[in-house]
Amino acid sequence: MKRFVFGSAAFLTLAISCTLSAQESGAGKETPYYPLKKDATWTYKVMGNQIIMKVAGGDKEGTKVETIVNGKAIASEHIQVRDDGVYRVMINGQKPEAPVKFLQLPPKAGASWTVETKIQGQPIKGTFVTSEEEITVLGNKYKTIKVEGKDFDISNMKTNITYWFAEGVGIVKLSFSLGGMDATLELDKYEGVK
View (cartoon, rainbow, N blue to C red):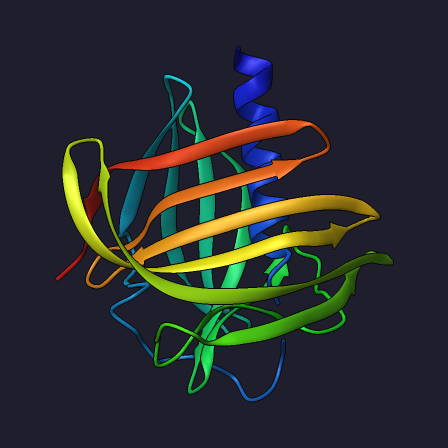
């Protein structure tokens, strides 16, 4: 099970990172759909285990978010909030050829955009589509913006990835499948910073 959690976290980071695009720096910009205050944490349940995402701080690349399993940071990514969306601009110290937008701003149902980039020479290509959906996650109800990427091509493997973003909280649910591995992360606890 421990191996699955580490594999899931690494895969999650790859899957999440497969949504990128770099223009002007997004440092200092914010959105309530992905609050990125230093020390904010999201605790997710996945198959009875926990994965923690923590905002570690910011630098010239953007805001660094670490993935923590069993008290140890096993992966990281840099996020930029720009006028037109939220982007992953670095994954585990590696920059994609173009950053990956994984949430359009302002968020609205019916939006779509294409991702086409490479990271370490591996292609990432697909289209995200948004809708609104009210969901219940571990007993809590959320009105969300659902961002769905069906049939993404990640390193020549078909991948499906769906995010649910709630205002004031961020990602409350994430579902993905890649290479025969399926997982759903559900938010157990969000600890924001005032």
